[in-house]
Image (cartoon, rainbow, N blue to C red; front, side, top):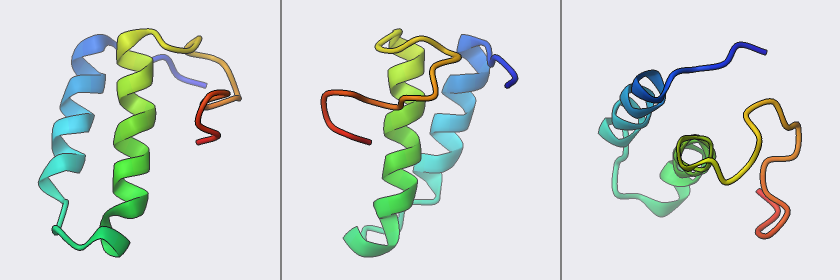
Amino acid sequence: METMTREELSTEIEALRARLTGDMFQDMEIKDQIHNLEMKLKGVKPMDSHFDCVGCGS
């Protein structure tokens, strides 16, 4: 698994946010990807962990 830099994570998050439509059902997968990237950016979980989030189950 490739480790992304903070700048790369931020760029990817912004690219995903630009794809949001405002429709909750269409945006669900994109928001999940944003959430996972933000957790990595903030150091909420180890970068190489295969568990995305123990607290929320994402």
